[in-house]
Structure formats: structure tokens, C-alpha cells
Length: 539
Image 1: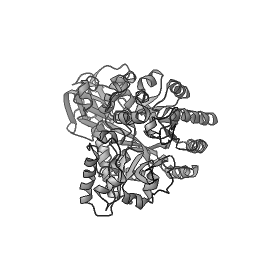
Image 2: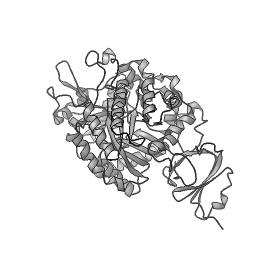
Image 3: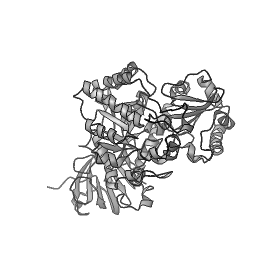
Image 4: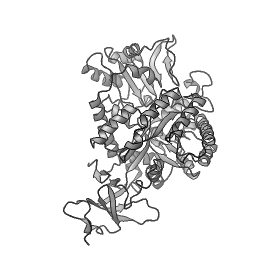
């Protein structure tokens, strides 16, 4: 009987299937959305070539599963796709020039916003711009400068528009920087709740185009699945429109946001809106659960010992917890009782300890929760005892080496270099037997499969090598983005390995990421990212 032809056949130097104990393969066939067959002989599947088969003959290339980014912000990437990119600025003057250029072609009164992927310590002034400085770029437009997820800077026009003045109380879980007279300087930490109501309603077409561009850009770096950890119900609707139009460049697993929430009722409202997604989810777009915050980020992560004095808003400052602990526990229980999962941001060591205490109480009250229901996002400064606790409790953790790559110098200003060197101890998490997977935390860290591998295996950062004892092997790093990541999303039977019957989600690399020279790894990109048998980024 003549076998049914394949839709796609790849011949290459090596197919790394990541199936334990399986030898090298050199040919892979795809039929429909699934892998149909593999062979150790590059010509071993030629009988599956038919008149409609696409053949990729790449004798020097290596095939790997598509990578997951298990903690990122695709929505932020999409929303900033049309914003002012300032990551190339090396001074406040250059940053202002970029904003001034945008202002020259923007009608007066319209908001101007920057993308969030940049660090103030990369500027020669090593600080944020002020509201008064932003006014020099334009005082005819409200300006919002974003840095990462937690920092915002407004010009005076925007401060007035948002009603932020000397009498405005700090936002819940955040702060408003003030001068000696109590007047806002323009810099806010976790202040989006004060800003968001005054921003224009998103242009639906612009939002969809930004998400389309961003999702394909993730794929171009080898990322086939993103776990977006800060989406709203409106964002989910936009993603669904792209999915229905066949324009998503990567698969998306959504965590609905609770940023700025203070009550269980607010969480219940989101849960009500999530109900229809029990039926609607598919392999391209599904809801994973709900995202909470235990503590803050670079400037407000909760520590056991004080921040560096120069960055302590009050003497002995140890960061901030984002929720009342009992309210947060009630909210978490509301989510898991409805059968959803929760991922909770915990960055500093006090934040990690407090989160494990909360998870322990939830597990005691609800002992039958399935494994993977409660997840620690970041676990940044987790010490040995906290790692052992997480493992004994069965708590998965996501780590983000690209975050450390970009913020090492900034974070050292707040925490000191010794503490920063122990952020994201991947080696120790693995040695402890943790269920750990990896991501980027874009826009704080830059997304990209090889970029993350480079950081995980070298501990290289913009501030030099940071904590080299925490480095892991390339094979381990790849597993954190593939097999371990698929386990986190509950899709180990579909993704993470290359085997017959699995989704044909693969990346093709001109050089083997396992053996490429260290100096070449960081910039390595796949020639093809293939999802469900379709090429989404031919280069």
C-alpha cells in the first residue's frame, strides 16, 4: 500500500527530538498539523514525497522543538509596536530627541508613548528623565514613558491630565516620586491605575496590527508559544480576533491580570468573563489562569534585609507587598475553586517566603488541588530553604534570565551586587529537583530563544558575568524552554518533543544551538519557525 504523502519533509544534519534515549534523526515528515515520521537516514522518508510535498533540504541545519517563553508580555509587545522605541538612546537628550521627533508629526493633545524595553542606567545620566525634561521635548502632548512593567514617567501635561499632584496619594502597592516640596517629579512605580483611565481607548485595528507584528517577531526568534502573564479580557478578545483570522504568529497561553485589584469581587468579575473560554480554547489560543502579584519588581521587590541606603525611600526600606495577605488568599482560593490555575509574581526573598506561606495555607484548605495549580512566577531571590520548600510543596517556578541580563546594573543599585548575583539560581533549582521552566519577562528582558540560552548558560549580563555558579548546560536550558515548559502548560502530550503524533512545532537552526560558539549563540536565530506544520517566519 502506498503511504499517504507528507505535506512537509525536512532533511537536515540533526533532528534533536528531546525524546529520552532516542538517537539522532536526520529527516522529519509532517502531515497536516502533526509530525508523521522521523528517520535516522536523511533519505529515509523519501517515499513520503508526493507532488504536493514541500521539501526543505538543509544538510547543515539542526531541528529542535519550537521554544516556549513561559513568562512574557506579548500584549505589551503588541501595544508598543507603534510606540517610540527608545532602547537605542544613550542619554536623556537622545531620548528627548526621539520623543520630539514623534511630537512633530503627532497632532497636539494626542498621547505620545514610548516602548518599555530600555534601562535608565544605560543612559549617561543613569536616571529617569523628569516631567520638566519631558516638557522640553513637548508640552503640547501628554507623554508617557514606560520602562518595563512597573515604571512610568509622565510630563507635566500628562500629570495634569491624570490629576496627579502633591495631594495625590500613592497608588496601591506603588509610589509617586516627589521633590523636596512634595511635588511629583513625573516618575511613578506601579502607577498605571492612575494613568489608564485617562489614556485614549485603543484603536482596535492598530491594536490588532501591533499584536500581529509582535507575535510574528517572537516566532522569528524561535518562540512558538508565549505564556502572556498580564492580559485583560479585552486583550483576550483581540487575540481571539487574530486567531480567527489566522494571523497569530505564535501560540498564546493567557493569564488574566489582576494588576491594580484590591478586592475578591474584582477577581470574581474577571472569572465570570473567563467562563466561555472553558469551551473556546484551542491549540493556538487558550486561557491558562489568573495572574497575581505578591511583591514589586526592581524598586519594590520584598526583601528580608533593607535596600541600599541611596535607594530607600524611608530608612530600612525592604520593599512592598502588593496585597493584603488574607484578601490575596481569598482571591486565590476563589480562582482555584473554579478550576483555574494561578501564577503569582514573587521576586524578593521575603516575597518568595510570603508566597510559599500563602500557598501552604491554600494547600492545607484545598488538599486535592491538581499539581501545577499554584505557580511561582520568578522566584528571583529564592534561597536554599525556600527552594526546598517549593519542591516539597510541588510548586512549579518560572525563571527569566533575560530579565537579569538587562537589569543587573540597575538592580545592583537597589539591592547591591551580592544579592543580584544570586537572582534566578537555575542550577540550584534543577539540583533541588524543582519543576522549573524559563521565559524572558519582556519588556523588562528581551525575548528570544538563543538569547535566553546564552544567559542561562553563561550568566552574562550587561553588567558582566553575574553569579556564574548558577549557570546550567545548554541541554538543560533547552529543556526549560521545551519539555519543562510544555509540562507547565499541561501539554506534554502535544508539544516539547518531536515525535510522531505531536504537533509539528519546530525550529530549524543554521547552526546547532547546542554546539554553536559562545560568541555566536546570543545572536543566533532560526531560519524557520514552523507551527502546526506551517512556516510562520521564513527568513
